[in-house]
Length: 445
Image (cartoon, rainbow, N blue to C red; front, side, top):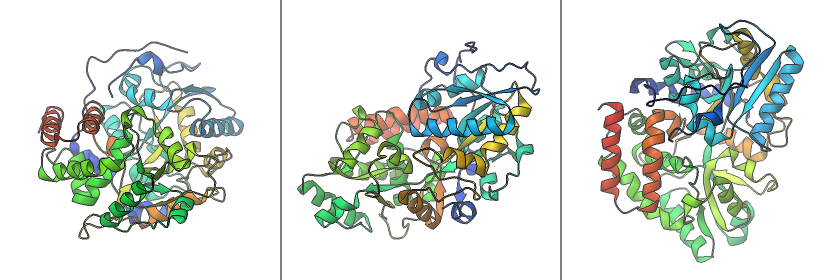
């Protein structure tokens, strides 16, 4: 295991805003496959890569190193372990895993890629993949494509500058989750618009239930609330332009988002900055809260809830805009720019995108929604099947705030800005002015 790292003097140069277009997928392209399948930089030593037993220069070898953004006895890590073991069985190669907890991996990714990264590592589609391709920090894997069972829309999500740099493995949707038993016991109905949602929140509050579970200790969950409010109030195209740096953060449109959010905050769990998303999920499971805006991965924190979990799309606020856009991030894998074992890395990547890899990963207790249309989907939970349905009905899909914009802007500006807002929600003018000033210094305009 090598601990050598070069510390960054500054956050690495990012790609122009025009590359953000790769992060937005139309429903028709994306769902050709999916409808079938049903921070500031921290200590770089925490993300030290595992050195393979081969020399540099991209030759072959018996070991492939794999940087994982999951660790410990949790479902995502177990899935990755199961997939790597199946690859080892089929290929005869050894996968040396470098397991790091999710937040540490995300916060140290620039240092990791600037240093001695693993041959293959977990990452995301969209702007945050494209920026690393532009910087030369990840490798061109165009010769891994096409991959049987991955639709051209997934190939589009893996593409930057005409080449492929990514292999999709799974996706999930963001929606409002709730327990049907709680709704039935109290006579609640799923809201169709913002007025009905507010009326429902008031009823829940009167019944001693906090309407919205909410947490932001980890910094990223609140981004989902900003995303959906911006898409509902200003539309998908405006949202993507804002993420790309083409719109001003002190505009009336953005201020309207924060004003609307401020008015909804009293119906959310208080003290969100001291709560993890898993703890908020527990409150939903225990019936202390009524609804929870999060991704389908919420089931990872509630494995024993069974069928008493359902979801609905965040309702419309403006009938002219509707509710046809949502976040549906794609997870997958990249290859480092100069892997120790390039041949083995590409063989591993080809496998990770396959139905066999998805089936192996889904042999664990909590399955994920596979990107590969040939994968077995019989083990998907009802909530995952519902996710496929909801995503298939969306006209526009975003990748999530920290994947649709520049990494430096998301980590160093948006996380602290949103947490400041949650602590002091009344100074919207000062907040948006501060974000805009920082945005200009990063994007250049």
